[in-house]
Image (cartoon, rainbow, N blue to C red; front, side, top):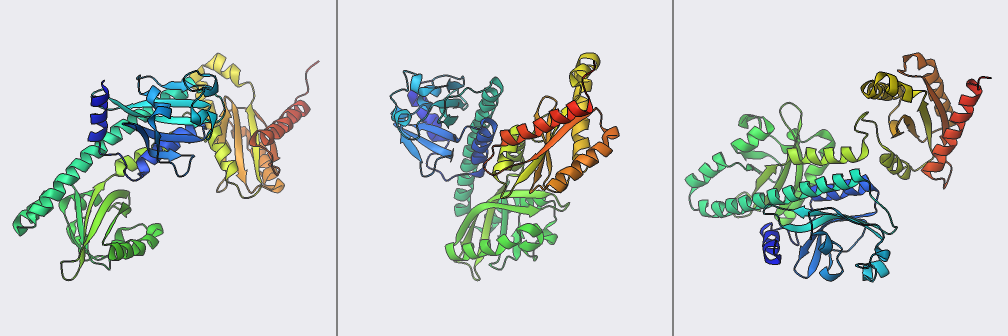
Length: 441
Protein backbone atom coordinates (compact mmCIF):
# COMPACT_ATOMS: atom_id res chain seq x y z
CA UNK A 1 0.00 0.00 0.00
CA UNK A 2 1.59 3.24 -1.16
CA UNK A 3 0.53 6.64 0.15
CA UNK A 4 -0.64 7.63 -3.34
CA UNK A 5 -2.83 4.53 -3.64
CA UNK A 6 -4.20 5.03 -0.16
CA UNK A 7 -5.08 8.69 -0.83
CA UNK A 8 -6.73 7.77 -4.14
CA UNK A 9 -8.85 5.12 -2.40
CA UNK A 10 -9.94 7.68 0.20
CA UNK A 11 -10.87 10.30 -2.40
CA UNK A 12 -12.82 7.73 -4.41
CA UNK A 13 -15.21 7.32 -1.46
CA UNK A 14 -16.31 10.99 -1.76
CA UNK A 15 -16.77 11.16 1.99
CA UNK A 16 -14.30 13.88 3.04
CA UNK A 17 -15.92 17.01 4.53
CA UNK A 18 -19.39 15.45 4.29
CA UNK A 19 -22.11 16.08 6.87
CA UNK A 20 -22.61 13.80 9.89
CA UNK A 21 -24.62 10.67 9.10
CA UNK A 22 -26.64 8.55 11.57
CA UNK A 23 -25.10 5.24 10.54
CA UNK A 24 -21.51 6.29 11.21
CA UNK A 25 -22.54 8.07 14.42
CA UNK A 26 -24.17 4.80 15.53
CA UNK A 27 -20.86 2.97 15.00
CA UNK A 28 -18.91 5.43 17.17
CA UNK A 29 -21.62 5.34 19.85
CA UNK A 30 -21.55 1.54 19.79
CA UNK A 31 -17.75 1.56 20.23
CA UNK A 32 -18.10 4.10 23.05
CA UNK A 33 -20.80 2.02 24.76
CA UNK A 34 -18.83 -1.20 24.30
CA UNK A 35 -15.63 0.06 25.94
CA UNK A 36 -16.77 2.91 28.16
CA UNK A 37 -13.92 5.03 26.79
CA UNK A 38 -15.17 8.66 26.69
CA UNK A 39 -13.99 9.70 23.21
CA UNK A 40 -14.81 7.74 20.05
CA UNK A 41 -14.27 8.76 16.44
CA UNK A 42 -14.08 7.69 12.85
CA UNK A 43 -10.86 9.34 11.67
CA UNK A 44 -9.78 9.55 8.02
CA UNK A 45 -6.14 10.35 7.16
CA UNK A 46 -6.24 12.90 4.32
CA UNK A 47 -2.92 14.33 3.16
CA UNK A 48 -1.51 16.36 6.03
CA UNK A 49 -4.66 16.30 8.11
CA UNK A 50 -6.81 13.92 10.13
CA UNK A 51 -10.53 14.53 9.45
CA UNK A 52 -13.34 13.19 11.64
CA UNK A 53 -16.40 11.69 9.93
CA UNK A 54 -17.97 11.00 13.33
CA UNK A 55 -16.93 12.15 16.78
CA UNK A 56 -18.33 11.41 20.23
CA UNK A 57 -17.00 13.03 23.39
CA UNK A 58 -15.42 16.22 22.02
CA UNK A 59 -17.39 19.22 20.77
CA UNK A 60 -16.36 21.53 17.96
CA UNK A 61 -13.48 19.52 16.49
CA UNK A 62 -13.57 18.47 12.84
CA UNK A 63 -9.91 17.80 12.05
CA UNK A 64 -6.35 17.93 13.39
CA UNK A 65 -2.90 17.92 11.87
CA UNK A 66 -1.74 14.49 10.75
CA UNK A 67 1.62 14.76 12.49
CA UNK A 68 -0.03 14.60 15.94
CA UNK A 69 -2.39 11.80 14.96
CA UNK A 70 -2.26 8.44 16.73
CA UNK A 71 -4.21 7.05 13.78
CA UNK A 72 -1.27 7.65 11.43
CA UNK A 73 0.46 4.86 13.34
CA UNK A 74 -2.67 2.68 13.44
CA UNK A 75 -3.06 2.57 9.63
CA UNK A 76 0.42 1.11 9.21
CA UNK A 77 -0.92 -2.34 10.10
CA UNK A 78 -4.10 -4.41 9.74
CA UNK A 79 -4.01 -5.09 13.48
CA UNK A 80 -5.78 -3.14 16.21
CA UNK A 81 -3.34 -0.65 17.78
CA UNK A 82 -3.53 -0.14 21.54
CA UNK A 83 -1.47 2.35 23.53
CA UNK A 84 -2.17 1.69 27.20
CA UNK A 85 -0.40 4.83 28.50
CA UNK A 86 0.70 7.37 25.90
CA UNK A 87 2.71 9.33 28.46
CA UNK A 88 4.99 6.30 28.84
CA UNK A 89 5.22 5.50 25.11
CA UNK A 90 8.21 7.16 23.39
CA UNK A 91 6.18 7.55 20.17
CA UNK A 92 3.58 9.72 21.85
CA UNK A 93 4.93 10.98 25.17
CA UNK A 94 5.70 14.46 23.77
CA UNK A 95 2.61 14.67 21.56
CA UNK A 96 0.68 17.94 22.22
CA UNK A 97 -2.60 16.05 22.76
CA UNK A 98 -0.83 13.97 25.40
CA UNK A 99 0.95 16.90 27.04
CA UNK A 100 -2.13 19.13 26.70
CA UNK A 101 -5.91 18.85 26.13
CA UNK A 102 -7.47 16.37 25.85
CA UNK A 103 -4.53 14.73 27.73
CA UNK A 104 -4.76 11.38 25.95
CA UNK A 105 -3.45 8.36 27.81
CA UNK A 106 -5.26 5.27 26.52
CA UNK A 107 -5.69 4.83 22.73
CA UNK A 108 -7.45 1.97 20.94
CA UNK A 109 -7.73 2.09 17.14
CA UNK A 110 -8.84 -0.39 14.45
CA UNK A 111 -7.85 0.40 10.85
CA UNK A 112 -10.62 0.93 8.29
CA UNK A 113 -9.50 -1.19 5.34
CA UNK A 114 -11.35 -0.83 2.03
CA UNK A 115 -11.18 -3.00 -1.05
CA UNK A 116 -7.69 -3.17 -2.47
CA UNK A 117 -6.18 -3.33 1.01
CA UNK A 118 -5.89 0.42 1.52
CA UNK A 119 -6.19 1.55 5.13
CA UNK A 120 -7.83 4.98 4.88
CA UNK A 121 -8.37 5.71 8.56
CA UNK A 122 -9.52 4.21 11.84
CA UNK A 123 -12.39 3.67 14.19
CA UNK A 124 -10.70 4.63 17.43
CA UNK A 125 -11.25 5.50 21.08
CA UNK A 126 -9.40 7.74 23.51
CA UNK A 127 -9.34 8.00 27.29
CA UNK A 128 -7.67 10.43 29.65
CA UNK A 129 -6.69 7.60 31.98
CA UNK A 130 -4.38 4.67 31.23
CA UNK A 131 -6.21 1.46 30.48
CA UNK A 132 -6.26 -1.87 28.70
CA UNK A 133 -9.00 -3.26 26.45
CA UNK A 134 -10.09 -6.86 26.68
CA UNK A 135 -9.50 -9.25 23.81
CA UNK A 136 -13.23 -9.25 23.16
CA UNK A 137 -13.34 -5.45 22.96
CA UNK A 138 -10.43 -5.39 20.50
CA UNK A 139 -12.10 -8.01 18.34
CA UNK A 140 -15.46 -6.20 18.43
CA UNK A 141 -13.78 -2.90 17.50
CA UNK A 142 -12.12 -4.59 14.51
CA UNK A 143 -15.53 -5.83 13.35
CA UNK A 144 -17.06 -2.37 13.75
CA UNK A 145 -14.21 -0.92 11.66
CA UNK A 146 -14.97 -3.52 8.99
CA UNK A 147 -18.63 -2.46 9.04
CA UNK A 148 -17.51 1.18 8.64
CA UNK A 149 -15.40 0.26 5.60
CA UNK A 150 -18.30 -1.62 4.01
CA UNK A 151 -20.70 1.27 4.68
CA UNK A 152 -18.31 3.81 3.13
CA UNK A 153 -18.00 1.69 0.00
CA UNK A 154 -21.77 1.25 -0.21
CA UNK A 155 -22.22 4.98 0.35
CA UNK A 156 -19.80 5.76 -2.49
CA UNK A 157 -21.66 3.37 -4.73
CA UNK A 158 -24.95 5.02 -3.79
CA UNK A 159 -23.53 8.50 -4.45
CA UNK A 160 -22.29 7.38 -7.83
CA UNK A 161 -25.70 5.95 -8.68
CA UNK A 162 -27.43 9.11 -7.46
CA UNK A 163 -25.05 11.26 -9.54
CA UNK A 164 -25.78 9.13 -12.56
CA UNK A 165 -29.51 9.44 -11.93
CA UNK A 166 -29.27 13.21 -11.62
CA UNK A 167 -27.41 13.40 -14.92
CA UNK A 168 -30.01 11.15 -16.49
CA UNK A 169 -32.83 13.28 -15.08
CA UNK A 170 -31.35 16.45 -16.60
CA UNK A 171 -31.13 14.76 -19.97
CA UNK A 172 -34.55 13.19 -19.67
CA UNK A 173 -36.13 16.60 -18.95
CA UNK A 174 -35.93 17.16 -22.72
CA UNK A 175 -38.25 14.25 -23.35
CA UNK A 176 -41.33 13.32 -21.34
CA UNK A 177 -41.31 9.81 -22.76
CA UNK A 178 -37.73 9.22 -21.67
CA UNK A 179 -38.52 10.63 -18.23
CA UNK A 180 -41.49 8.26 -17.86
CA UNK A 181 -39.27 5.29 -18.66
CA UNK A 182 -36.81 6.35 -15.97
CA UNK A 183 -39.68 6.93 -13.53
CA UNK A 184 -41.12 3.49 -14.15
CA UNK A 185 -37.90 1.50 -14.11
CA UNK A 186 -35.69 3.34 -11.61
CA UNK A 187 -34.42 1.31 -8.66
CA UNK A 188 -34.52 4.52 -6.63
CA UNK A 189 -37.72 5.46 -4.80
CA UNK A 190 -39.45 8.35 -6.58
CA UNK A 191 -42.49 10.19 -5.25
CA UNK A 192 -44.06 13.57 -5.97
CA UNK A 193 -46.46 15.43 -3.72
CA UNK A 194 -48.03 18.84 -3.23
CA UNK A 195 -46.98 21.38 -0.62
CA UNK A 196 -49.97 20.15 1.39
CA UNK A 197 -48.52 16.65 1.48
CA UNK A 198 -50.92 15.06 -1.02
CA UNK A 199 -49.15 12.34 -3.04
CA UNK A 200 -49.43 12.90 -6.81
CA UNK A 201 -47.26 10.05 -8.13
CA UNK A 202 -45.08 7.16 -7.02
CA UNK A 203 -42.86 4.92 -9.09
CA UNK A 204 -43.00 1.10 -8.91
CA UNK A 205 -39.92 0.92 -6.68
CA UNK A 206 -41.50 3.22 -4.09
CA UNK A 207 -44.78 1.32 -4.28
CA UNK A 208 -42.93 -2.00 -3.86
CA UNK A 209 -40.92 -0.69 -0.90
CA UNK A 210 -44.17 0.05 0.97
CA UNK A 211 -45.93 -3.02 -0.46
CA UNK A 212 -48.83 -0.74 -1.36
CA UNK A 213 -50.42 -0.47 -4.83
CA UNK A 214 -50.15 2.88 -6.55
CA UNK A 215 -53.91 3.45 -6.22
CA UNK A 216 -53.66 3.36 -2.41
CA UNK A 217 -51.03 6.10 -2.45
CA UNK A 218 -51.83 8.60 -5.20
CA UNK A 219 -54.38 11.17 -4.04
CA UNK A 220 -53.82 10.37 -0.38
CA UNK A 221 -51.93 12.35 2.25
CA UNK A 222 -48.45 11.47 3.44
CA UNK A 223 -49.97 11.54 6.91
CA UNK A 224 -51.77 8.28 6.14
CA UNK A 225 -48.49 6.37 5.79
CA UNK A 226 -46.55 8.05 8.62
CA UNK A 227 -46.69 6.41 12.08
CA UNK A 228 -48.94 8.23 14.51
CA UNK A 229 -46.11 9.12 16.88
CA UNK A 230 -44.21 10.76 13.97
CA UNK A 231 -47.15 12.77 12.61
CA UNK A 232 -45.97 15.98 14.26
CA UNK A 233 -42.82 15.96 12.07
CA UNK A 234 -44.74 16.14 8.79
CA UNK A 235 -45.71 19.80 9.03
CA UNK A 236 -42.10 20.79 9.79
CA UNK A 237 -40.89 18.88 6.73
CA UNK A 238 -43.46 20.62 4.46
CA UNK A 239 -42.51 24.03 5.86
CA UNK A 240 -38.78 23.40 5.24
CA UNK A 241 -39.46 22.37 1.64
CA UNK A 242 -41.52 25.52 1.06
CA UNK A 243 -38.89 27.79 2.64
CA UNK A 244 -35.64 26.18 1.44
CA UNK A 245 -36.90 24.53 -1.76
CA UNK A 246 -35.15 21.29 -0.74
CA UNK A 247 -34.82 18.97 2.22
CA UNK A 248 -32.83 15.85 3.11
CA UNK A 249 -33.16 13.35 5.90
CA UNK A 250 -34.69 10.03 6.89
CA UNK A 251 -38.46 9.50 6.79
CA UNK A 252 -40.18 6.70 8.72
CA UNK A 253 -43.16 5.22 6.84
CA UNK A 254 -45.69 2.41 7.28
CA UNK A 255 -45.83 -0.51 4.88
CA UNK A 256 -49.12 -2.24 4.07
CA UNK A 257 -48.61 -4.81 6.85
CA UNK A 258 -47.85 -2.14 9.46
CA UNK A 259 -44.08 -2.72 9.49
CA UNK A 260 -41.74 0.27 9.33
CA UNK A 261 -39.72 1.42 6.33
CA UNK A 262 -36.93 3.99 6.51
CA UNK A 263 -36.28 6.17 3.47
CA UNK A 264 -33.18 8.34 3.17
CA UNK A 265 -34.48 11.13 0.97
CA UNK A 266 -33.40 14.23 -0.85
CA UNK A 267 -36.45 16.14 -2.08
CA UNK A 268 -36.65 19.36 -4.06
CA UNK A 269 -39.39 21.86 -4.83
CA UNK A 270 -40.03 22.33 -8.55
CA UNK A 271 -40.75 26.06 -8.75
CA UNK A 272 -40.95 26.06 -12.53
CA UNK A 273 -44.08 23.93 -12.49
CA UNK A 274 -47.50 25.43 -11.89
CA UNK A 275 -48.60 24.74 -9.28
CA UNK A 276 -45.33 24.04 -7.50
CA UNK A 277 -44.79 20.43 -6.47
CA UNK A 278 -42.20 18.41 -4.55
CA UNK A 279 -40.08 15.88 -6.41
CA UNK A 280 -38.79 13.27 -4.01
CA UNK A 281 -36.01 10.75 -4.45
CA UNK A 282 -35.08 8.25 -1.77
CA UNK A 283 -33.28 5.03 -0.96
CA UNK A 284 -34.78 2.35 1.25
CA UNK A 285 -32.27 2.09 4.13
CA UNK A 286 -34.44 -0.15 6.32
CA UNK A 287 -31.78 -2.87 6.42
CA UNK A 288 -29.03 -0.42 7.40
CA UNK A 289 -31.30 1.13 10.05
CA UNK A 290 -31.98 -2.27 11.60
CA UNK A 291 -28.27 -3.05 11.53
CA UNK A 292 -27.58 0.13 13.49
CA UNK A 293 -30.14 -0.91 16.09
CA UNK A 294 -28.66 -4.40 16.25
CA UNK A 295 -25.18 -2.98 16.79
CA UNK A 296 -26.49 -0.87 19.64
CA UNK A 297 -28.29 -3.90 21.09
CA UNK A 298 -25.05 -5.88 20.97
CA UNK A 299 -23.33 -3.21 23.01
CA UNK A 300 -25.90 -3.15 25.85
CA UNK A 301 -27.31 -6.69 25.98
CA UNK A 302 -25.97 -9.91 27.48
CA UNK A 303 -25.77 -12.25 24.46
CA UNK A 304 -26.96 -15.33 26.38
CA UNK A 305 -29.89 -14.14 28.49
CA UNK A 306 -30.80 -10.99 26.47
CA UNK A 307 -30.93 -9.08 29.75
CA UNK A 308 -29.07 -5.77 29.89
CA UNK A 309 -25.38 -5.76 30.75
CA UNK A 310 -23.37 -3.85 33.33
CA UNK A 311 -22.36 -1.10 30.89
CA UNK A 312 -26.02 -0.28 30.28
CA UNK A 313 -26.66 -0.23 34.03
CA UNK A 314 -24.25 2.70 34.40
CA UNK A 315 -26.09 4.54 31.62
CA UNK A 316 -29.48 3.84 33.24
CA UNK A 317 -28.31 5.13 36.59
CA UNK A 318 -26.72 8.25 35.09
CA UNK A 319 -29.97 9.22 33.33
CA UNK A 320 -32.20 8.92 36.40
CA UNK A 321 -33.59 12.29 37.58
CA UNK A 322 -34.42 10.83 41.01
CA UNK A 323 -33.33 8.04 43.31
CA UNK A 324 -33.26 4.53 41.92
CA UNK A 325 -33.16 1.20 43.63
CA UNK A 326 -31.98 -2.30 42.91
CA UNK A 327 -32.41 -5.88 43.99
CA UNK A 328 -29.35 -8.08 43.58
CA UNK A 329 -29.52 -11.85 43.25
CA UNK A 330 -26.94 -14.60 43.60
CA UNK A 331 -27.71 -18.13 42.41
CA UNK A 332 -27.05 -20.79 45.04
CA UNK A 333 -24.68 -23.60 44.04
CA UNK A 334 -24.79 -22.68 40.37
CA UNK A 335 -21.25 -23.97 39.83
CA UNK A 336 -22.42 -27.43 40.85
CA UNK A 337 -24.99 -27.37 38.05
CA UNK A 338 -22.32 -26.56 35.48
CA UNK A 339 -20.00 -29.21 36.92
CA UNK A 340 -22.58 -32.00 37.17
CA UNK A 341 -25.10 -31.27 34.42
CA UNK A 342 -23.00 -29.38 31.88
CA UNK A 343 -22.72 -25.79 30.73
CA UNK A 344 -25.61 -26.11 28.28
CA UNK A 345 -27.97 -26.88 31.14
CA UNK A 346 -26.37 -24.11 33.18
CA UNK A 347 -27.02 -21.65 30.34
CA UNK A 348 -30.66 -22.75 30.24
CA UNK A 349 -30.96 -22.10 33.99
CA UNK A 350 -29.60 -18.54 33.52
CA UNK A 351 -32.07 -17.80 30.71
CA UNK A 352 -34.99 -19.18 32.73
CA UNK A 353 -33.94 -17.21 35.81
CA UNK A 354 -33.99 -13.94 33.83
CA UNK A 355 -37.53 -14.83 32.69
CA UNK A 356 -38.44 -15.50 36.33
CA UNK A 357 -37.08 -12.10 37.42
CA UNK A 358 -38.80 -10.28 34.54
CA UNK A 359 -42.30 -11.60 35.21
CA UNK A 360 -43.45 -9.13 37.93
CA UNK A 361 -41.64 -6.04 36.64
CA UNK A 362 -43.43 -2.82 35.80
CA UNK A 363 -42.65 -0.36 33.00
CA UNK A 364 -39.09 0.92 33.22
CA UNK A 365 -37.91 -1.87 35.53
CA UNK A 366 -35.30 -4.10 33.88
CA UNK A 367 -33.08 -7.09 34.58
CA UNK A 368 -29.28 -6.67 34.38
CA UNK A 369 -26.74 -9.46 34.34
CA UNK A 370 -23.82 -8.26 36.43
CA UNK A 371 -21.68 -11.24 35.47
CA UNK A 372 -21.58 -14.99 35.95
CA UNK A 373 -24.51 -16.00 38.18
CA UNK A 374 -25.10 -12.50 39.58
CA UNK A 375 -28.16 -10.51 38.50
CA UNK A 376 -29.76 -7.20 39.36
CA UNK A 377 -33.25 -5.75 38.96
CA UNK A 378 -33.07 -2.00 38.30
CA UNK A 379 -36.03 -0.02 39.69
CA UNK A 380 -36.22 3.66 38.59
CA UNK A 381 -37.75 6.11 41.05
CA UNK A 382 -37.69 3.35 43.63
CA UNK A 383 -39.37 3.48 47.02
CA UNK A 384 -38.75 1.12 49.91
CA UNK A 385 -42.35 -0.12 49.55
CA UNK A 386 -41.78 -1.06 45.90
CA UNK A 387 -38.54 -2.90 46.64
CA UNK A 388 -40.10 -4.79 49.54
CA UNK A 389 -43.11 -5.67 47.38
CA UNK A 390 -40.82 -7.10 44.72
CA UNK A 391 -38.81 -9.03 47.30
CA UNK A 392 -41.99 -10.52 48.71
CA UNK A 393 -43.26 -11.47 45.28
CA UNK A 394 -40.01 -13.18 44.36
CA UNK A 395 -40.06 -15.12 47.63
CA UNK A 396 -43.70 -16.11 47.14
CA UNK A 397 -42.93 -17.31 43.63
CA UNK A 398 -39.56 -18.88 44.49
CA UNK A 399 -40.94 -22.33 43.70
CA UNK A 400 -41.16 -21.22 40.03
CA UNK A 401 -37.48 -20.30 39.88
CA UNK A 402 -35.22 -22.76 38.05
CA UNK A 403 -32.71 -22.51 40.92
CA UNK A 404 -32.56 -21.44 44.52
CA UNK A 405 -31.34 -17.88 45.00
CA UNK A 406 -30.39 -15.27 47.57
CA UNK A 407 -31.20 -11.59 47.33
CA UNK A 408 -30.78 -8.14 48.83
CA UNK A 409 -31.89 -4.62 47.97
CA UNK A 410 -30.76 -0.99 48.30
CA UNK A 411 -31.83 2.50 47.21
CA UNK A 412 -29.20 4.74 45.65
CA UNK A 413 -28.12 7.63 47.87
CA UNK A 414 -27.20 11.13 46.62
CA UNK A 415 -23.67 11.20 45.14
CA UNK A 416 -23.30 7.45 45.67
CA UNK A 417 -21.70 5.44 42.88
CA UNK A 418 -23.46 2.53 41.22
CA UNK A 419 -20.85 0.16 42.62
CA UNK A 420 -21.44 1.39 46.18
CA UNK A 421 -25.20 0.94 45.86
CA UNK A 422 -24.72 -2.59 44.57
CA UNK A 423 -22.26 -3.29 47.39
CA UNK A 424 -24.85 -2.26 50.00
CA UNK A 425 -27.41 -4.55 48.40
CA UNK A 426 -24.81 -7.34 48.37
CA UNK A 427 -24.17 -6.86 52.08
CA UNK A 428 -27.89 -7.35 52.75
CA UNK A 429 -27.83 -10.44 50.55
CA UNK A 430 -24.94 -11.96 52.54
CA UNK A 431 -26.53 -10.98 55.84
CA UNK A 432 -29.81 -12.62 54.84
CA UNK A 433 -28.00 -15.74 53.63
CA UNK A 434 -26.16 -16.06 56.97
CA UNK A 435 -29.41 -15.54 58.87
CA UNK A 436 -31.50 -17.96 56.86
CA UNK A 437 -28.79 -20.59 56.38
CA UNK A 438 -26.59 -20.67 59.49
CA UNK A 439 -23.35 -22.67 59.10
CA UNK A 440 -23.64 -26.30 60.13
CA UNK A 441 -21.70 -27.46 63.22
